[in-house]
Length: 292
Image 1 (cartoon, helix red, strand yellow):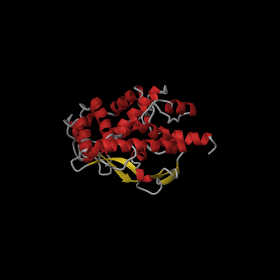
Image 2 (cartoon, helix red, strand yellow):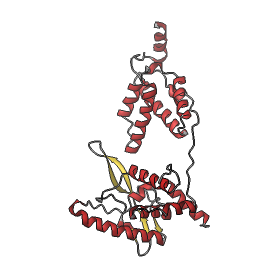
Image 3 (cartoon, one colour):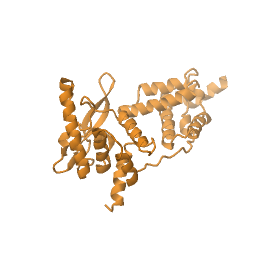
Image 4 (cartoon, one colour):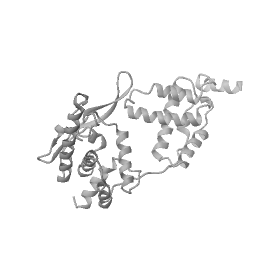
């Protein structure tokens, strides 16, 4: 053991402590992430990856972590049916944490960079057929959901653009939508995650779209329903000018939209593994099939 420590000192100029665990290394990195990781969504995903690493390897002394142990974790993820991208990101999270630990003299090598990542499952993005669209829109649903789906399918907006859409962006008489805003999750001064509507960061996503007449009719119906809700709520209404707002006028959390969309798809007999973003693919697919 003494010879091993002397050889480590000779090679690296230091001797890494033996009592620091993988859990401590990973938790330290996730508690103080690099400055470029600012998005609350990114931080949440990194925390999920870190939790997976800590559950599997947390008690292992960081200096004794071996590539085969990392590969065993990644192999189990592949066996459990996780996607290739998730497996790669978990490996990357561990590698970044160990890279910082190397800088601080807590480990002598980055074993995550030496480990091979297996191929996991690959979920292909899908689009709905005209028959599936008919099944979905044939359901009995609220004016909110009908307008949401018809804008998504008929105009191809991204989920964040849909939830950031404002009435001032619509010209229902001309039948146009100006895509200028998107909903974002941001951390406030107290660290709590909140919702905010902001201008699109660059000019490339900004666009003016013609909407199908069916979409315009659904939006007009939603505007009437929302006006009645605003009158009923009175001073409790928080007016953000949003088209797809919550019952009191506030922005909607994307998680709730995803869950509600899956429930509708399941009711329509399409399965419950659809994602709202795939309505953007559906928009493109429908146009392509129509020769556009």
